[in-house]
Length: 90
Image 1 (cartoon, rainbow, N blue to C red):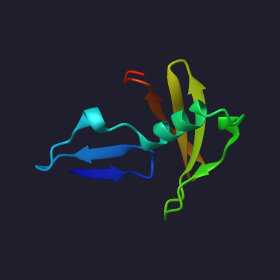
Image 2: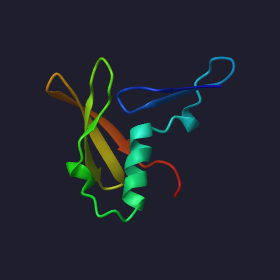
Image 3: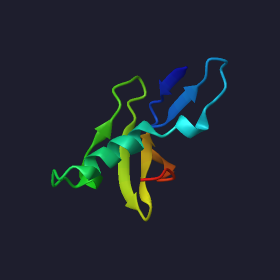
Image 4: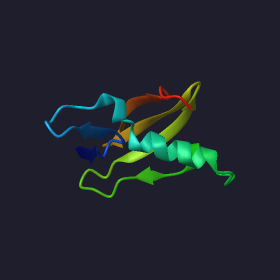
């Protein structure tokens, strides 16, 4: 099995034969937002600055939606939306 954490917040999971395993491909950024939300740290998650320290230097802007979270990735000051509703059981 191979797991890839992409710098856009998504996760790729592949079996031993290279086949994708979509049931395991939960976005790592969504998981971290859920982790923050579950802990009573009194943080305003939508005001936290998130960034990947890579050559692309992606900046993430999370925002709450009805069934979970969504986020945008700032690439050259142009946001691209990544829908990330909770689709797995609690």
